Amino acid sequence: MADPIAELLDERGTIVLDGGLATELERRGADLRDPLWSAKVLVEDPELIREVHRSYFGAGADVAISASYQASFDGLAARGFDPKAAAHLIRRSVEIAREAAEGFDGGGRLVAASVGPYGAVLGNGAEYTGDYDKGEDELVGFHLPRMEALAEARADVFAIETIPSIAEARALVRALERVPEVPAWMSFSCRDGAHTCDGTPFEEAVAVATSAPSVVAVGVNCTSPIHVTSLIEIAAARTDRPVVCYPNRGAFWDPVRKVWADPPRQDARPLLRPTEWREAGASLIGGCCGTTPEDIAAMADALGR
Image (cartoon, rainbow, N blue to C red; front, side, top):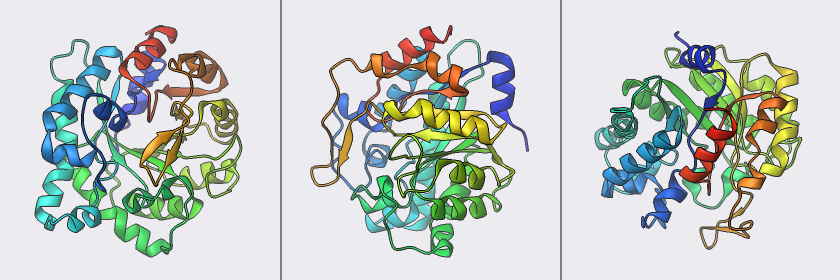
């Protein structure tokens, strides 16, 4: 198994990830009040997704994360897509990101295939609690078909992201055994500076994630930036694999109104501290929900990119 993350780190020292995809789509006029969330735009306006990916690459990102976070066979079936059509749409998320990378000088731009948690399909904010009634075998069965489709699209790496619970992490480790040709990073949603959203000590989550040989980086995402430095330090002390961090802007997801509530001040960049996170041990750094191409440009500049 090739490791494009290690290769890019050898070349650049720090990898700049992109920022929020769905929230940037909304900022540009997309209506995501739908169970498919950003995957809705895969159906209705794929060019807008391509445009957002290109904006992040233009801002200095080395990696685009695909619009497959909420694109699952279960979720698409509920919207009337048969398995063949669902697989095609999931693969297209990777292909669109790859197309967006074309035309940029310098090469070295990667496509990370987003694998969101089961809770994202529920549409009730469960990806920030881990509170859903699924056994480990059921979670493997949920994740594996999507991961196989994303692998068929030749993603460079899986972005297994916003994982709220140790149980789901274990299921994903098992699923990764079935698609060993694609390396992965695994990042968790965390409720504070020491625990995942289900209350698991973060060092235990890191240990489970890194038990998978194909997990080439581990860390935290879509978590308030005020908690990130502590979580990076915990991960860096527990593993010698690269640490990834891409927090949100510090707001909270309201599952009833389906909006990010209580946002911070208009300019969140003082909360986004990429040099502090690099010093704490992170080497893949970007943003999640609410962050913008302007934020990523500022991060890239601060990181000397």
